[in-house]
Length: 351
Image 1: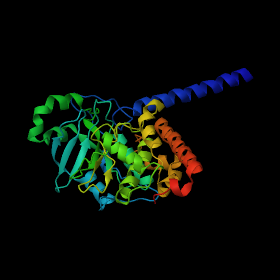
Image 2: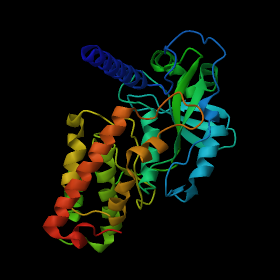
Image 3: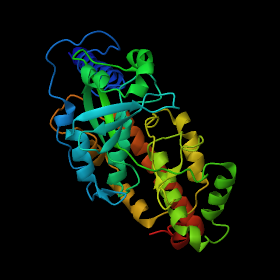
Image 4: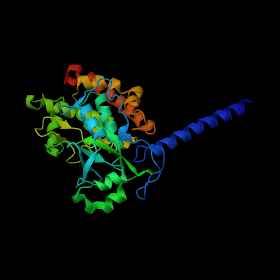
């Protein structure tokens, strides 16, 4: 009898493991939807479900920052969620598909569709935005999931983008209902490359953030933002930040913009090595951000990374969420070691 009960229990456990693996595989595709197969060609079929652009966005932070570059998050999100698309222009120069979207009211957004490029997984932009607000950071542009139909996609292409139709048809992933599960992000009008990720820029900022010398007063605010970025990029496992031209600021270089987060949230610790190196060359941190790590919990992440209302997709998989929690513990431990070595006032020297 005991053997039969044991075998039954083991079979139940194995069933749960197989189910969990199936969920991870399905969600790891480029689309948000967990139901239905995906295809990059063919006509749409079926009536489909309610567009994700109509789904209400849940509270995105326990203590929300609520603004980006002086504008309300809610205002920017509502525009991106509800405004009709007037025109879509392919952004040139990148290996992935990215568009500038002009809305009917004159506002703009960047749009990344579900696509075959494995380095661009749009849902991760939403995850980065919501986790940034959970931490009290306002450097990530608001991002929301939005389903765009094949007809809407191709009928609003800018004339300059028509020459790229073969690529767009081949690389954009549409589900069986003829929709691509993409992400809309606020379009930042002007961005600047201040050279912070050049060898010279990295050398200067490393000096600012080390314990070996005082921080020059004229770069203190910039140094504080670079310190926040080091923590943020490690938490989201983003190895792409210091890859050249991916560390940008607003027009007057007063605000570092935490942009391009689609190649992040890796589970494999080997992919964390580059952001870990940046974390380790940083020895000065923010007291507020260190305290905000307490909000990175299983419950907190589940709350901000579950799309309200729809219930048929996850912005991060359970395995990706667990990996964030592991990295949170690593950051706490590393900063704790610095505090033990140098004292809290010297390490947590930024507000």
